[in-house]
Image 1 (cartoon, rainbow, N blue to C red):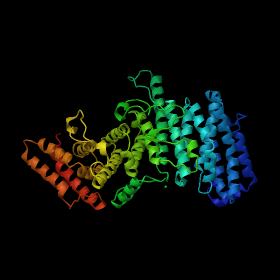
Image 2: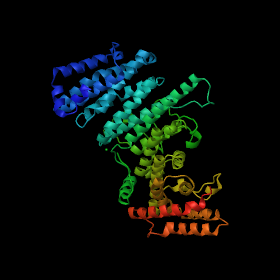
Image 3: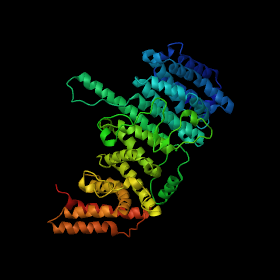
Image 4: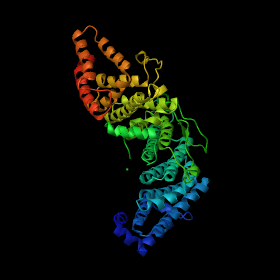
Length: 528
C-alpha cells in the first residue's frame, strides 16, 4: 500500500522520481521481469501489476516531456522485452514456467495501462502501439491457457478504457480501434468462449465441477470482450453526419443519447443468430460491408476508422457466445444490453445500414431483452427500442417510406399469425404492450416502455389498430370490459394534447397516458 500512497499527488511524484531509491525500485522491478531468470515466478502477477502501475503513475512528476518519455521507456522496457520473448517462443507457452512469465509481463503492462494519465498517456500509447503485434501473437499462442487469455483481454480492456478519452486524433483512434478488432478476431479464431453442449446433470461431482469452471472462465472472457467494446464505443472519433444530426436532435427532443468521458454455438445460437464465419488467421472483422483496418493500416497518419463498425462487428462476433448459461450471470447480461442501448441511441443510422443477417441477429437479442424478467435489462432494452423507433419515425417523415429501417421493417410472413401483417417494429409494438398488460412487469418499466411505444405507434398506426382490436375482441361477451378498454385505448392516443412529434413534451404527456392506460386496462384483459 505504500507505493500507491506515494504516487497520489504530483508533488510526491516529483520527489519519487528524483530519489535514487525510486530508481532502485524501478531496476528491481525490471530485474524481476527478466526473461533470463525465474525471478518473475517469485511474485504473484498482482505484485508486478501494482509495482508497475505505481512506477508509471510517478511519471506525472517528470516536468520535461523528453525526460518523461525516457522515464516511461525505462520502466516498461523489461515488460516489453519479456512480452516479445513470449511471442517469439511459442513452445515455452506450453510449459507452466512460460505461461507464468507471460502472465507476469501482461499484468505488468496492465498496471502501466491503468496508470495512464493526462501527461503520460502519450508515452504509454507509443510504447503499446509498438508492441501491438507481440500482444496479439501472445494471445494466439496462449489460446489453450485461460490465464494468458484472461490477462490479454483484461490488458486490452484497461488500455482502451484509459486511452479512449484521449483518442481525439484520427490516427490515435484508428490504431486503438484496429487493435481491439484484432484482439476480438483472434479470440474468435481460437474458439474460446464456446461451451460444449450441456448434457443431463451428471452424478459425477468432478464432471459438474469441470463444467462449472468452464462456464465461469467463458463468462469472464466474454464479459471482458463486451467491456472492450463498451470502451471502444466512447472513443471520440468523427461520426457519420446522419447519426451526428440524429444525436443532436435526440438531445433536443429529450432523448438519452449515451456517451462515454461469431463463432460458437450453445443454447442461444439458434435464437440469436447463426455462427459467424471464420476469417482466417490474418483477416479482420467485417460487418455491413465495412472492413476494419489492420494495425499497419491504422499506423498511417491519415488513417481513420468507423467506431460504430468496430463495435457492431465485435457484437456480431460475441453474440453467438451468449449462451443461456452465460446469460444467467447478471453482470454479463447487463453489460451487453447497456452496450446495445448505447449503440442504438448513438448510431441508429449505422444499425439500420447493417446487412440483413446481422440486423436480424441484433433484433433477436433485443426481443430477448424486452421479455427478460430483470427490470434493469428490460429498461435498457426499451431504451434501445425507443432510439431505433424514433430514428425510423424521424427518417420516414423526412424522406418517405424508404427512410429509416427501410427493408428491415418490411412485412414478413412468419409462423405466428399475430405477426403476419407487419414488420419488425409492428412485432415490437405488440411485444411491448404484452409486457405491460399481460406480464408481471414492474411499474418502473412503464416510463421506458412509453418512450418506446410513442414512436412505435406513430410509425405503425395500422399495427396498433390491430393490437387494439385484438384486445377488444378478446373480451367478447363482456360489454362493460369492452367499453372500458375502448375508452382507455382512445384516451391513450388522444389525451393530453398529443402531437405526432417525438420530443420531450410529447414524451412526458404520453408517459402519463400509458400509466393511466395500464392501470385501467390490466384488470379487464388479464385472466388469472
